[in-house]
Amino acid sequence: MTTIDSSTATRRRTAVTIVGAISAVGAAVAVAGLGTFGGFTDSTSPVGTTVDTGVLSIDVSSPGGSAALPFGGGQMLAGDSRTHLIDLVNDGTTPLSAVTLKSWATSSSVLDQDPVNGLQLTVESCSVSWVETGSNFSCSGTERSFYAGPIVATNQPLAGAASLVAGGTDHLRLTATLPAGATGDAFEGASSGLNFMFTGTQRSGGAR
Image (cartoon, rainbow, N blue to C red):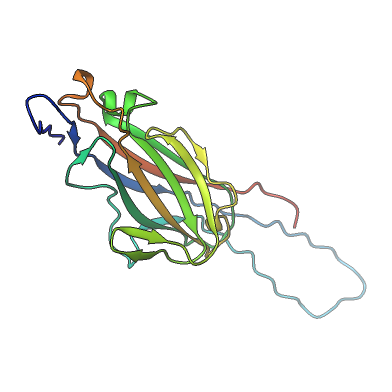
């Protein structure tokens, strides 16, 4: 839950704790085959064939395989930021047409309602695992920005994500920032609960 600290009688700073849950949504897809048969005066040797089903699945975990709970625990003051790393993996057998991010408040306050001074979110990826040095994270490969805006994001596409390809992994860095302008009575005692969800969408079927 969110708590508030006052440093002095004349200067007050808002301290918040943000909690979130994260999940990945996938769907199972299947393809079916049709057979034809014709009778002729001549024939070839039998040719065997197999039509398989494909599996569409994405998985979210912290690097190393532990459960992903972004920004859990602790306090944030106005001007603070907090970073969490997750791996978004296409562990299915089929490519995806899109991967999107959605976040919403399960319990709402000015922290998620104010698009300017409320919590802000950035989502970035690295083509290799992020390197952690103290409280800093750097990318030795190719870095890409997927989203920068209010903590509540509606079906934000992760264009060009590595997880669009079967077996692909996006090494994501999620950063929540409480702007320096998050002061005043409106932020006193504010508390928000947040959910994050990544959704993979199957590609359209076509002739094969």
